[in-house]
Structures are given as structure tokens and as C-alpha cells.
Length: 563
Image 1 (cartoon, rainbow, N blue to C red):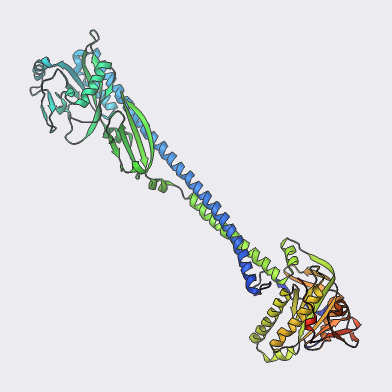
Image 2: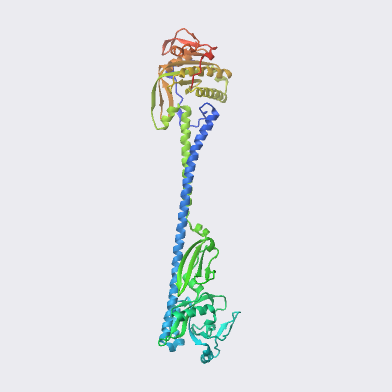
């Protein structure tokens, strides 16, 4: 300022929180302050991201696992429901064979004339392709048996399969179990006359039922009446003469496995497979498979054991991992995205809060900024002993008239940024700038050596301005002040009291490139400096005051206090 102004008339430079203001960091070094600020900011955000992403990822994994388990349980319920239908069909088929055997024991003379019973049973159980009466004859009875059967079927003969699978006349053996009649005959005519005991698989089941008189089932066989590669099983039940308890023959039911599955399993969803295994067989291959068999090796499996007559079977349903993923809902992903978004928003909030806190710390004393960030709306305090410094540019009006707006602002920014660094290095507090005037204070922290550092700051300010071709007037006074923050939307930290006014008058009545001390400041410094006493002057608002001009050549005599 070119002219002295009343300290009471000085206007505080307000701070608007959130305003786009470029401020240099405080601290011993600009770069070290930046690194510390970035590290502090990134450390907090990194911790937030680690916790947020970690919690989100953990919840996502757990929800995915729970969702995967839900899909598997749903598949298991679906599979077991279908398997229950298969089991019911198998139990019903076994009951049909047992019931037909009982019927033939009661009406032995009508064994080949019980079409109505067989047709009714087959109608109720479409999985059965046929019911047959199979007569047991000794080896020496073969010729007479064939002669008897040719009376009704002239082409009748007892047959067996050769190595190529063709039906040929049966060879000699001790016992024969011959398909004598079958219902329905249409489609099953080739089976009439076939010796069931000629096949080791069939013979094993026949021996079981003839010995135990209970139902028995064969392993997988190729059906005689099928021209293709269709496979199935026979369900057999011995028919016994009630009087002699001799085995007269047996009833057999033709069960095609694909018919059983087609009836019980309406459809197999994509990405899943169903297989039937014979637990009593040494074969590792499935009796029947629907879907891709490779799914069994890598997919999730559901198994249900079931007994078919005397034979243990195993029903197995498998679902591919990809199908499990496809059936899973998007809820885990929705939570995952929501968690990341929440973490990002929290990070933005933390960054905004940190930026606001750093902004406060850059323009307010640290302890004042801390109080404001803790929610204090009003900050006011009294300090009994502080040193106040005013520094004003000499001839600023003329300089401002010669420079353009950009040049002027750039010059002031460079000058006051340098003043900020000097103030921070010496542990003092910048209060404000008023036009071309710079105000700082020492002692707000209660330290005893603030006046020495204020004097050294004054010398550094003069040297800094001089290197840029500028002149300053500097005034210093020491005494009590009241400090506080005013404003709600725009905050301003300021000092009030005679100490401020007297320091301003010391500067206003000062000499270019010299430091003016009040009488109180000079007395407090004692013998540590050399100064020239000036004539008492009447100063507006403070009366007549004595001031001192610090000598230019005694900078070395001003001790740098310990921080």
C-alpha cells in the first residue's frame, strides 16, 4: 500500500470452501509437502479401496458360492423328482411280473390264453414291451415239446443266437427255458421259441428266480425281437406247481430302458446328463445315457440307488459347470458392482473431505483448521503475547498501472508464494493478504521465541522482494490479540486488537527497505539487535508512539531461534 490505512478498516480476505483456488503447500519444502500430502491421501484411499474391494470381493465370492449351491440344490430336487418316477415305474414293472406269475399259477391250462390279463397290465405300464410265458423243459423233452407247439405254429422251433447274432436251432443241453407265448405277439414274434437259458446273462437271472422263487432281473441284454441295437433287461418270476413245488417255467417282462427313460424323464435340459448304472455288473459303462457323458466327469452329480428285483441300479444325473453358471442369477454381480460403486463414492467423499481439510490447513493455522474439521462452528481465542508483522509494497499503484492484469497477478503470486514459504520455514502463520500488503503472526502456538523468528522473517521478506526489484515497508509490534474465525459460507481467520493496529502503523510510517519495530518489540528483543531510535510520532488511532529502525548491517546479530 502506498498510503497508510487504519488497521480497523482492513478487510479480511475470505475463504470460500470448495472454491477453485490454487495454493502452494505449506512445509519446509514444497516437494516434500506434496509427497507427504499425496502419500497421506493415497494411503487413506488405498486403505479404503483395500477394505472396500476386499469386503466386496469376499461377499461376492460367498454369494456366488451360495448361488451356485442354490442352483445345485434345485437341480438335485429336479433330478430326484425325475428319478422317483423311474423308481415307481421299475417297482410297478416288478409287481406286474409277480402278479402275472401268480395268475398263471392259478390258471395253468390257460397260460397261453391269458391275453386279456397281459394286455391290461401292458396298457397300464407302457415301459414294458412284452410279457411272456417261458416253459422249462428237460433236454430229452425238446423234440416232443417242439412237436406239440407245431400243432398251432407249424414253423415253431427252439432257437438260440450264434456268434454272429443270428437265430439258429438250439443245441443240445440238459435244460431249456423256451419263450412259449408272448403278448403282444405283433413285434415280438421273433422271440417265440427262443431259449432264454442259451444266453449266460439270461440264464443267471433264470437260475436265481427258479431257486429263490422271487423276482430276478438280468444285466443289460440285446433284445431278441429288436432288429437294431436296442437294449433292455428282462424281469423274471418263477411259476411253481402248487402241489409238487416244481418249477413249471417263469414269466418274463421285456423292459426297454429307453422307453423307461422316455416315459419318466420327459426332457433333459441342455448342459445336463442322466445315466443308469448296473451296480451288480462288472461293466463300467452305463446301461443308458442321455446327454453328454463327458459332463459326468466334470459336473456336479446327484445319485439315487434303486433295486430292480434283486439287482441294484444306480441313477445318476450330472450338470455341467457352465450350465450351473448359466442358471445362476445376476444378484452376486449386482452386489459386486454396487460394492465397487459404493467404495468409489466413499473414496470420492474421502478425497473431497481430505481436499477440504487440506485447503483449510493451507489458508488457516493448523490448530484452527483441526477445530473446524472437528465440527466447531465458532473458533475464538485470546493470545497474550504474539508478534504481528505487516509488509507493504512501495509504489505499488504505479507498478499496477504499468502492468497488465495477467502480469500483475503473476507478479503478486510469485511474490506472496515466496513470502508463504519463508513464513512456513520459520514456523509462523500467514494471516492474509490485503491488496499488496502481507500480514503474518508468530506466537499463536504459545512459543516464546516467535519475535526473533518474526524479525528474521522480515529480513528474508526484504531480501526476497529486493531480488525481484521491489521495495517493502515492514512494521512489527508485539502484544495481546484476539483471534477467531468468522463467517459461515465463507470463512475468514483474522486478528483483532491494538497490537494489530500498532503493527499496521509501524509499517505505514516506515521507511522503504527498512524494518520498523515498536518500542515494545525493541524492548523484548533486548541486546540481540542494533536499532536506531526515531522521534516519537503521532499515529492515527494509537496516539504518539516511539519506533525503532533496525540497522541493515546487523542481520548476523539476530539469532535464529531453535525451532
